[in-house]
Length: 155
Image (spheres, one colour):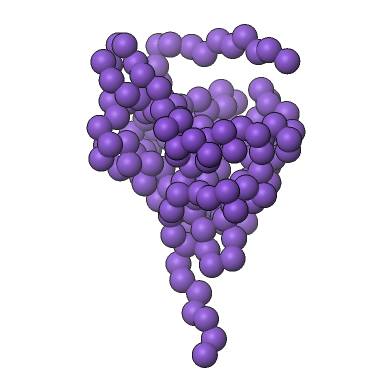
């Protein structure tokens, strides 16, 4: 009997997903001005999270054959909030699967996870030049902060 394909589902990423996650990040970093794709760095960063779940979680949206989206939730502590908070990164849906509601499903899953685990806040960075990205997050309850990001990068 042939296998029936199911609707995409969201679940925790596994180490076996690593090659597909790297490819999603390469696509993401190819369009972000602040980052350059580097498969070695992306794989190393993903491994650090996947191999130590106390650092964070990566959730994937998958079909029976392919990872079509991901979100990366990194855990830290906020003294301002008096508890655990999340830094959300790497929200991406494969270009062939966009505009089908999958990004919203993945984002809502991440928000529900944060609420269920009693995190106090989710912070994210989105491209300043991408009005579409900002509108997407605003539509899902995120608002601009008066804080601005600053970086010191070590090579």
